[in-house]
Length: 305
Ligand code: 13P
Ligand code: SF4
Image 1 (cartoon, rainbow, N blue to C red):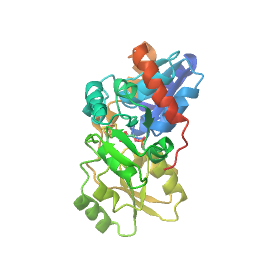
Image 2: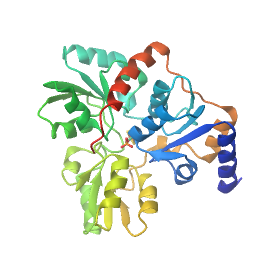
Image 3: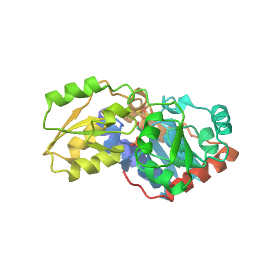
Image 4: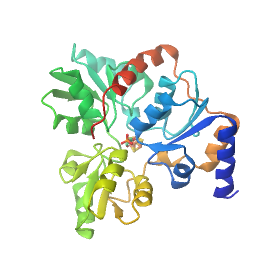
């Protein structure tokens, strides 16, 4: 079946079943094109919490669908490919976080949404790359413990006087980007501005003209007078950047920045998810209630990046 026929079937079935299709900015182009909404983790969580649809088809990775299930217990949240995970989220479990918390009594835990529901449940507040600085500042405590991303934590440390303790997790895709690779991209495109995701290592962020979430990069590129940009994040974002800015040019900081898990979902998987109404993501109720507190607390804080 062609992509066009698959897309037609998906749209018709989504309407018939009152399903909303959410897609992360890293999804493959054809999936982004059939989605009701594309966005970064924060935008998609907010959209999930506000939707009146009965079914949420979450085209992304497990922690994103779990977040939707945490905020929408009355909806069927479906992750089309149940094996779509996140290397960073797998770097911290609840037992490890409990042990880490014991080292810092009374210090609040700020957990990046790229984490399991169990880890969120052990946290005081969540954050995304779009609101991390604001979330930490909102706590007004002299110290915080950030998990699981060391690079996001070190980025936040540059913007606050609060002492940031952090877990040594990282995104295998962003953390691999080197200064040497960025130098090669800059040499090839000397006029281009560098946009980087805060999951990149500090020495790469030092070279950036803008450090933003994925949706923050879309806004920055649209508003900037510059015509060329090097993009230091997963290459899926290049599709939307190019589509939304036909007069501008975008280059990957490295062609190796591919998140395999984000590429597991295609149109066939989306159609199958709608037809079978599965796989459904279920978060056990005691965990969900604890995680919900941390997610809702985050949602009350405005985004800043
Ligand atoms: P954003 O929230 O910026 O879209 O990032 C999510 C992610 O997984 C980055 O690797
Ligand atoms: Fe996780 Fe990195 Fe993939 Fe984002 S790009 S989903 S942080 S592994």
